[in-house]
Length: 466
Image: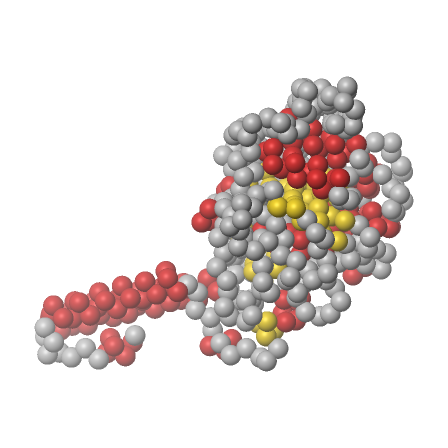
């Protein structure tokens, strides 16, 4: 570009010079907007061991501002594959959350073996190298026959990898409970949302009936849902731990903790900034917040064999679900209420003393949860017996035909009700983390275009003064 600038001859007409300058500036701006970040030349030729689909990690990403654009659904969540490869061990080295949560120490006691974690989400690509052999046969409650792969969005695959990514080699991303099994339940469509909570309620019930000991719900909405509340009570009554994200500010019309995270008995998880005790600015918090976990600067598996950077409470929630799996693997007979109590009793208090509205009980601590002496409790301490439309931790819906759940009518799960839009809309609470070093290269390209334009203007002024 500089060569073209200095190559303008004095004899060219003024119109040509103006056209050349504007064309150069316009071309540079267009290149930045369409092509995106320009990687450094040193990273253009990867080593032979490179994995496709992962962006080079040239510097820590913690110092960059969080993503401000909405990431709940539609174009804001769509993620383009990253074409520049990186070393396989670089993916592993970016798993900072494992160090933060002292995973290697926790694994001396438990790896989650024998525990099934249901990922109720956009689906899971079990063919990803990090998830091969980790994913059980699941169910798709959305597919109309036109879906492109088991997870057309990638959200659920990333969540599953954070829970149970394999740890049998030095390649790829590792889950916090690497020997747990994933039970995929697809409830989010190819736009990563669903407009009726009934489908999520059906997914919860199916997961419970098919062996899930822990359920992760990295989705939510602003309204309550009696049908979903009934399904969650069904899970509680069958001794299942349920974890959900509190939601993201950019994807919400209000600042209340999302439902189902605020359902009594559910572990509502908010997000923290990378390698710090600071609440992520995009995380919704409130009175219902129970725990916090890392939510930014995370590298996760995407459908196929690649990786991407992600952020959001969607990706904090599975870390707590994985911690629950570690506990259930160590104490297979421990009740769900005891597991919940152990998680909240051993959390590292990082806010005001005791439970608070921003951090809940604090940062989940898998090591303490697996090793501390915690007095037993007789029930789930999060269940306050008040629930939107149903009695918390009450009789399992459908268990007795003559004992319907309070507030749910004769069809507690609404299976026979006509499909309709409810007050609750399912949406994910996370998306691609664009706060990586490559944005610097885009800024650099834009700066170069501006400098080139300024040089052209200066040249014209000098020519006119002659």
